[in-house]
Amino acid sequence: MFSKYRDDFSPEHVKEIETSFRKAIELNPRLWAPHYYLGELFYLRERYSEAKIEFEIALEKNIEQ
Image 1 (cartoon, rainbow, N blue to C red):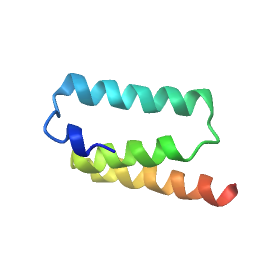
Image 2: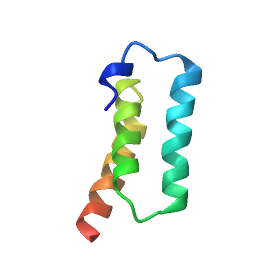
Image 3: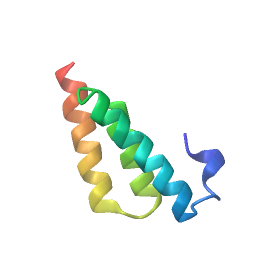
Image 4: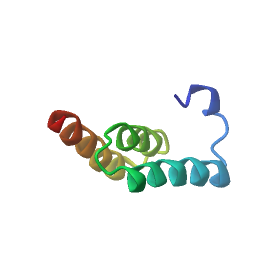
């Protein structure tokens, strides 16, 4: 998903993407995909502990469905 934006990791762009995923989670907490993509964003930014948390949440929500 982020392949075309890998070179644009300006703080503003990263914050915009993170905010979008957090809004999606807020609107529908049962969704797993926003957690997965938020985890991917964190992973690409080398925020591994945050990525792990989001990936685990995505997995739990995906199993629940």
